[in-house]
Length: 178
Image (cartoon, rainbow, N blue to C red):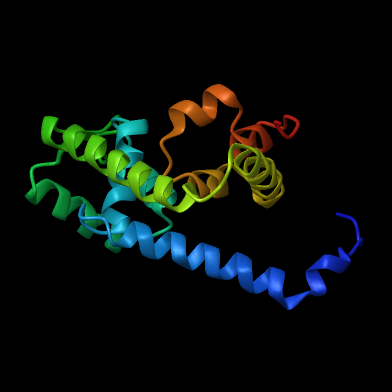
């Protein structure tokens, strides 16, 4: 790591704008009707990694084991998830039910609608600029595989992976996408 300090970062307005944008984004996502952000993150993780264990889900969500067990119990109670015996008979394999897959589709649609509204005021040129800046920030922010999972826990990865996800690229030791 280098010791170069960006003089722009000494400007409190840039810091405040980034913080306000992050909070406005999270508030927008929290206002969507599909349960909580944790529930949505769990559903999305299970859609990406069917058959994963509670421990793998715990790592993805950044929760304690007991908290993850409670999330899993809630999803099972709602009929969104099934549990089967895992690979070592002591663990369980978690799989979305048909209703769980429907909830994932609904959550992704709601997320797209909410975030599209936030980007609506930007012109096509501004959207390209925003995307370039976001790619750079996310690539530099990604620390390791576990962190990558946490960063993308609410993402609809299909388009991003096809075009070059900065988090995935950094995790795999690839150059920052453009």
